[in-house]
Length: 428
Ligand SMILES: *Cc1c(COP(=O)(O)O)cnc(C)c1O
Image (cartoon, rainbow, N blue to C red; front, side, top):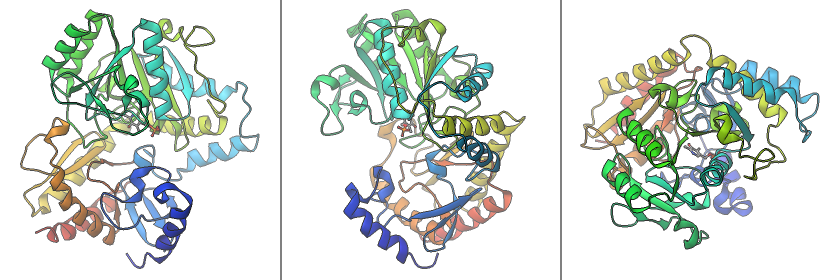
């Protein structure tokens, strides 16, 4: 990496324009220190900053870019579509096409509604769960992120089953009081919550592959348990697959584990790099959504044709044979390669499919948020800046995971292993 003068100038200007200089907090580099890199362009697995530095990218826009940057077929479909206008606020054929592409291969849902972000998908899905069940309370897990929905910006209080505290100013206690928070992987806590709030819980929301607070390896058994206890209690099981959807498999984590949730939310990959989210469920549950039912939900730019075109082009490529197996192979190659040259015993990798997470820990497994040692982030900080110097870009926080895209080549992975080898030496 050469100079970062242009990024620094742009960040100084940005700070006068946006809170903290950014339009989404983690971009500000606060947890790794230093200034954010301003990106000028991307192609395939590589990005270039405003100073002309080149990086191999493992952030991939936080997950959406499963084909890498500026994928030819996505660009072609987008540019063709936008010649005919960019938004109508009336139905277009492209919405049908993307929906059919998803519903044909995804047997877990029968109908879908497109929205414009993951947060919006979750917010709408929660309203649907409440409207359908005529219940108010929701149960979430400590360590899962579901976007910046008011009632989900909740951190656990002390105790096994709690109404947590809001994790953001501006969220009234009265909202938080409808959200029950329990630790991940804790069956006892879930059972207790169901005993205590019998017939009150509208839905249990979970990231079936929790990947927003490290990669917390959960496994099938706990999800199966949730499926059963939800069914027994007339509670809907909501898989928030905004990050795992079209990533763990075409049918997300539901497909990976073959567990049928009642409602699923998507985002990130579904829009091919454009702002798209979606929620889906059975025909019966979805019939509660307006204008068919009485759960109101709408969006001026929902199902935007340009975004639909990007999604169609991206998801079509995800359906190619062995697509997911190849991603996983690359991930294994990278992680195994780094572990071979790893000279720092605390550095461990956790991975699933094409998601990987590096942590500094003595533990063999990290299954809950409490297992993550906040002090270990000091190591991540050092490693992060060394990797940048070596031309490797990752999400600027030790709590964030890395993503492998179809565009990452063996040469990229070999270079990355080399970069890690050098960077790890700085840790000792
Ligand atoms: C990213 C994410 C969200 C929020 O999506 P946005 O598009 O950022 O609003 C919600 N849930 C999960 C699991 C996510 O990974």
